[in-house]
Image (cartoon, rainbow, N blue to C red; front, side, top):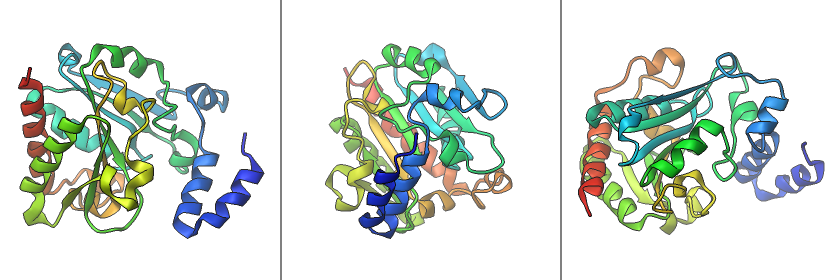
Length: 242
């Protein structure tokens, strides 16, 4: 249920933060609430998994895929195919208002298929679409310090010539709310108790696709392959370590 007092207070947070807070209040609080709104799998949203024979290594997760945070599922699938990484994605399929109706916060994301996979994997690498227009930025968060450093190094080495930069979300004052610090965040719910969260700004996602419409995502740029190889390289290093 929407709390009108909370919405009123959100207006005082400033335009960008206030708008984000209001959208968060409108979204479903958990999977049960989503179903209670008569939203149904394979009609209004779709759950996809693959390469689960390799889930013990790590799990790539796009909890807000397709029309919820466009581009995130496409990136996950591009990375997954390189080394057969296990993956999970939750995709919005509504004609409009996918974010408001289908976005479950990562600290409350209790969809049963994912909950069954989390105890089976060493760590999670999650993919999100961050809504600001602060250039071509990938904010790297999560509680897995070694993993965060590996992703930062590999992403910046691979994407520098494309004008895309990776920043440590835990060290950025602009990224406090997307740093993935909570132990309840699905990013941090693998066996390690810590994972890595990638938040792609709008500008960063547009570097990898012709546009973020359905048609535009079917026309990936060459930069998408560079991104996927950079992530794959970091994951390879992390999963080979004892």
